Image (cartoon, rainbow, N blue to C red):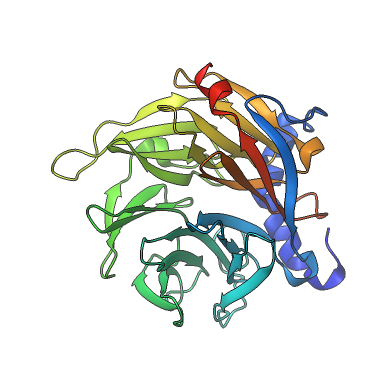
Length: 328
């Protein structure tokens, strides 16, 4: 699907979205709609260099830190749209062909701590590299926790109050907890709602109002798992269904309302607290298999990886109309 030298990676990467394209059909040919406006592409990435952005974390100055999945990189995107590579992770000895499901090594979830430290995930299918990594400002990337080589660590969330990182595994169907100092991971939840149905299960992950929220790509669901006083998980609540190809997401700041990236359909959806949803961005706005969303103030940042479209991986910005959001 890509140029010849990328064909093997491209075929594997395309699976991320292709599994849901057939079920959902092409994206609607509509333009940006309330509560988003002024959608525009702020940065284009180089497909020939495998710059397929997978996840995003924001800094106070408007910079965006992203993982380039197939390039095995962490990068900073300046407010002017300039891309600077901060780290390239070592390639596994087998080239990544044993990475579960996908068959190529990839960087996935990323979060930023208040002191500027970046934490991110790397999946290789090998025991020596798969895990949770840390990049301190001006430093070198370092693995701080090994994760199962048989899994695919994907979503990442940070609880600064307890200095705990949480990780979804899309193959093993789990959420794992790891201290920010690193160490031995612990399985926090292996609830059946996190499991895949044959491809990728638990995916995006956020901490919100005393609970962990996760998406399940295969099942098209949004899940809420309360964090109990003893730190253990409460009963899983399914808060939205019918979200085919759902990847990462962000809360709008209005209760439990969510903006979600629908990878295969090439859309962004607004999900209401009652589980109803509407399409607010499509391919007509520049989306190319969107993977993740972040919000800073009234600006929504949307990454597109172009896993299937193989045209234009990019970073799209849109204005969030808080009045329109709260009126829903």
